[in-house]
Image (cartoon, rainbow, N blue to C red):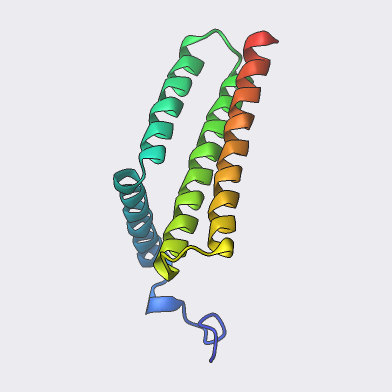
Length: 128
């Protein structure tokens, strides 16, 4: 089977602004599905909203503020990917399987690592 890129056409025949527009629609759908279906994502949104507000209220440098924003968005990105992994694993089978468990546990470990990064950044900023 020929890969779509090899044929000179993008999947679904969309190029240019149409492709960008449809990408944004799919991204919105992903955010909405994650927000509705994943309590952890909603909790992280609240946590990071509070941290971002704190970053603008506290007397910290612009660089520190930018780092706080970056790590908050990285944590949300990791949770989106973790939720995607869980959805794919569940779509394949709800049956218990060691590889399915490993995939979900690895996604969880990635999110834990991201949250440790957020905590470390805040620790360095607040404690100097």
